[in-house]
Length: 242
Picture 1 (tube, one colour):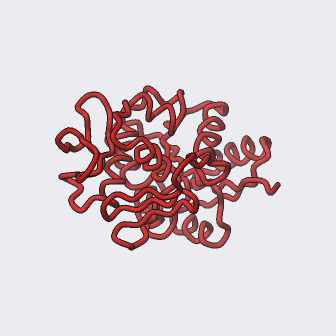
Picture 2 (tube, one colour):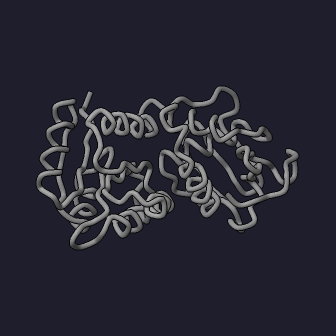
């Protein structure tokens, strides 16, 4: 089996050396990029399995890298940054990050985050038993091929976005609490991460809903969780933002 590839994007040589050392010692193949433009070029050329991305860089910052990357790639991204403000975390998640780790951090924590995000890629993802296709209005989810479309037009989802949509659609009509979704999609170690679910629900709504501010598919159950409903079928509560 080919070893998994990790692209480390950081302009600090000490951090590059640290991340390369701890990842290669665990069997990953590592490439390093010292800036945002180099990161995007390396991603296109080398096709890594996951990117570890710093936010503060001399050319394109991490936010701009995320914005440009998500125009053409679903590559899982873990942001690793000294910025610990909630606003920075929410912005990074809204732009397409899959995880956010604040410096300083332990090697074990980093490796756990890498393993968690790789579990949410296409490698070894379980497919639901039963119908291979979910159809709801203009939305279509092909579970066998892991393809999503709206009105016949393909929709590009990251692995984490797809996992969340799959969980919601295979439980259509049911309330899924915050803790259930966090545990099933990210893992039990993420139960105290309140920003993740709202950010990913916003991302799904922008891609799937005719009017993301007035959703009809993914509804918010206030202070409880989320429910996927068919506007013409499954009953649900009034729509609300996350």
